[in-house]
Image (cartoon, rainbow, N blue to C red):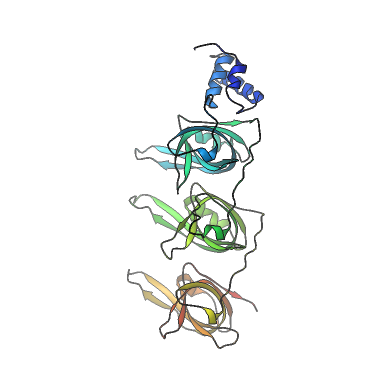
Length: 383
């Protein structure tokens, strides 16, 4: 096996990655696992190798794509286990954790057999880990570390507590074009819950996915959140007014109007929280609305037509209900088109309604018209 060395010298080569007590406990565990086929010194060498012995200590901010890395970190969050079909027909498994140190945060993907440690609850937020894996370009940008058969992950007791400076985003920050967040952490109040739909994946007629959306707000603004597949199922447990915590999401512009959205897939997490945020809707007066903008308005229903069905250019049939709303003075009156499910809204003449995120366009008579579609919500309010 080469030159003989004692356990104390092997431990020194680890450079303080773990406490001596933890190192000795792992040696005993290794000897037991090997069924007595190795002595303590050999077990010490094996444990030290798994902990990255003789590898320089690396910080998260210094990890670059294409490197094999070994580093210590603290667990921030743990995702569920996802199964998927490989091209050869075999079933793969993956679980994602978000980790951090004093220099930043990072996503780590655990594959196949290593997923079992997550499945049985062996990794939890707050634990310290020693990880060996391969750094690569991450999902949605940045860098992540992949830990497969040649990698290693171990719960350790470090010499010093790792204090993670976890970044929390405001919604206003996320909507700045230069921000480009690839690991969104935000707390918001649920303002609107959209529909959940199923779709066929491109190029995979036998594979379907699920997608839904909600709108959340904080003191700085509001934003649409898109939830994919298993994350979309969480919509059933949400109600308007709930406060939620999102970690591990990413931002992108939608194809409809270029607005920034938060997307949450396998790498992200969403859950209710006791943290409170206060959101106040910015209401635009009917006299101040302008063409080609999205706004929120309040008015009294002063006109109500019959619901119609319209056949679109793609052959699909959609319902529309045209109404008129006026402000308190009665001097400003605007036509409103309620599309799809909004056309079934039980409203009557005299009702005071709030329309959130309607789109303003030029009307038939040269005035303005409000379009209430899939991104909008509407409710009857009391005086």
